[in-house]
Image (cartoon, rainbow, N blue to C red; front, side):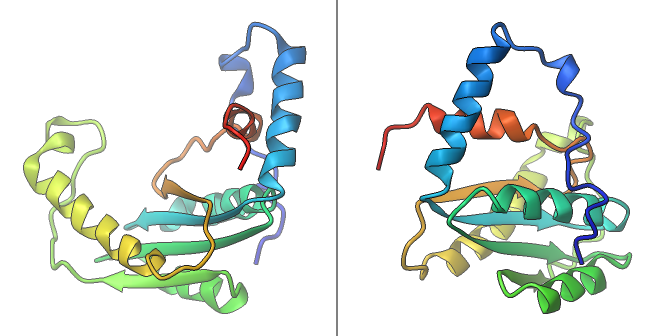
Length: 172
């Protein structure tokens, strides 16, 4: 299912330069060494994301490879495109993935950047959806971190930047 098309992030690293690339590289490697001992849960939300779903699933797959173990929980709600069908295919092909389809019967489309992006309606809806995956992960035995990703993110993320974050944490 992960054909490698987006195995490496298309994140524009050059737009986010670091002061000392050598130190940054060392920290990213240190973060990777710590991640190899950790168990994580990725928790994601997605609605009508058919056009970018494959890209982000490849990114999640790549990022999950940094860890000892990873489980992936995706809450999909009220999609009107092929998102739900595509997610089910990922779930069937990867035992780490659990798809939860939620029906809120909310036909309103909220902007990620417009005036309605911070409306109480949208915030309440997002909280409801996030509580669904929180219920799912509450029974997990050994999870060191929960990583939250909104699947409508088009630009991806920096793998090195992600790993750098783990280099700053205290050892477990």
